[in-house]
Image (cartoon, rainbow, N blue to C red):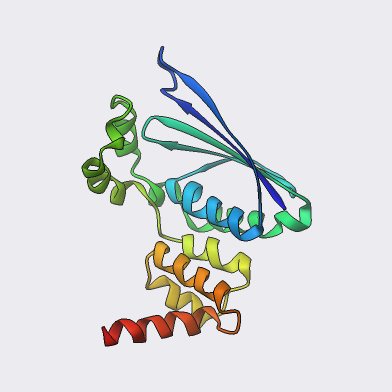
Length: 188
C-alpha cells in the first residue's frame, strides 16, 4: 500500500493563517495515482522532493497551500514516480496554470472560491489537461499509440472514467471500453 499524507495551509502569509493536517491514507496504486493526477498535477503541483520511495508536492489552490507526501517501497512507488517524471517532462507550468490568474485568485478573501458560479467561471482557466493523459495512463501500462490517441481526444475526467470501467471489465482494454462508449453515445 502507498501512504499519502495531506496537509492544507489556509490564508498563507496572513494573520488568519491556519494549518490543517488532513490525515494519512493507505491507498492502492490506483487510488494514489488518481489522487496524484486528478487533485495535484491537474492543478499545477510543484514537485519539491522526489526519491525512489517518496514524493512531496505543493499545490496552490485559491489561497490555500496543499502539501502532499506520497511514500511506499521503491517497487510500489515506481508508477507514481513515473507519472511525476512524465508530468515534469510534458506539463510545463505555463501549460498548467495561468500565473497571473493564480496571483489574482490568491488575493481574494477566503471563501470566495466556494461559490459554484465563481468555480464554473474560473476553473476551466486554472486546471491543466495537456499531458496529464500520459501521467495517468502510462504508469498503468496503457501506452499503445492507439490507446493514447483515443485518450488524447477525451477530457481527463472522461479518460479517468474509461480507466475505472476497464477495472470493472478486466477483459476489455482501455481502447475497447472507449470505443464501446463512443458507439453507445452515437446511438443516444
